[in-house]
Every structure is written in C-alpha cells, then in structure tokens.
Image 1 (cartoon, one colour):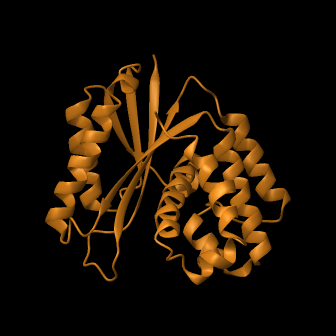
Image 2 (image 1 turned 120 degrees about the horizontal axis):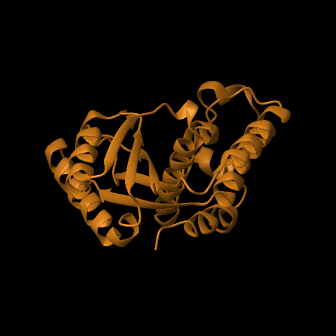
Length: 225
C-alpha cells in the first residue's frame, strides 16, 4: 500500500490581532512512507546527544529567541542545534507546502477560519495529482488549535476518502519538528522582506545573507512543485 504521511504545524493564532502586519501560516510536510528515514532520524538523535544537548524537541522559535529549555544554551550552541535541523530537512526525502493568510484580510476568528479553509482547499486541489499517487493518507497534527483541527479534518475528509487523522506530539516525531522549522523559515522570509526581523532574529543569524542563502533558499528547494 502506498502511504503518505502529512505533518502539520502552524504559526499564528485565531485571537485578536495584537500587532500589524500579522500573518497566519500552516505548513504541510509530506513524506512518502516508501522512503525510509529511520537512519536519518537516528543520525540526528545521535548528533544531538553527542553535542551535549538534552532536548527532545528542536523548537525553532524558542531556539532562536533563547526561550524555555533553550535558555541555558549559548548563541553558538543554539545555532549549532538549528543547523542540525537544517541538515536533517535538507537530507530527508520530504516536500512541503505552506499556506499564508494575511490577517488584514481576516481580522476576526470567523473571517480567518473561512479564509484559511479556502486557501488550504485551493492548495491541496492544485496538487491533487500528487495525492492521487497514494492509497492512504495519514495526517499528523498536535491539535494545538481547535479551530485549525476542525478545518483540517473537514477539508481532508472532503478531498480524500482514504485519510486517517492522528494526534501527535512533536517530541515524538522529528518530521513534526521539521514542519515547525519550515513554518518558522516561511515566516522569517516574510519578515525579512518586510524588514522587520526582531532583535533576537538578527542576532541569531549573523548576517541577513546567512538567513537568505543558507536557510531560506535551501528550504525552498523542498517545496512541492
């Protein structure tokens, strides 16, 4: 049976807009189960351990901002950790799509739900040929936002008859962490273009060109065509 796993992460929330400009992003990472990634996962895990990190979840935003469990690590250590995730993403046989909604066009919860559903549905339909190659689709999401969970369940159930949903913890799935990483990069791409990278983001990436050439361009190569 040809099986496709879909790992989903989001950036933004359905609440009141606290600052402008604001965006809501949803990233879908696709993995054909015929392409085994076990050795790549084991290699990443060993690389993390051998470098002295005691973390299960490479959570990109907190890594950059030095938050949560990453507070105890120096800038150089955190950069090293994010490069490990970049290398993992680059070497994995995965692809992705990211849907972006400008909150100027969706200022409240109802408007955002409608706009998001429309954009996700459109994106999936544009790549229907890709999905038709699989007998079964398994969707992994941590159910972090009820509104998004509802939208995902509705759209995938309508679009595909062979879909299964699984609640998943990012700590247990490196590809959920990859979705988080890619989603973060897509947001950084927008912020870089709009010249509004935060102080912590500017400090983390020594030069704007490092962010663009090393991270954003390599991630872009994984986009589903």
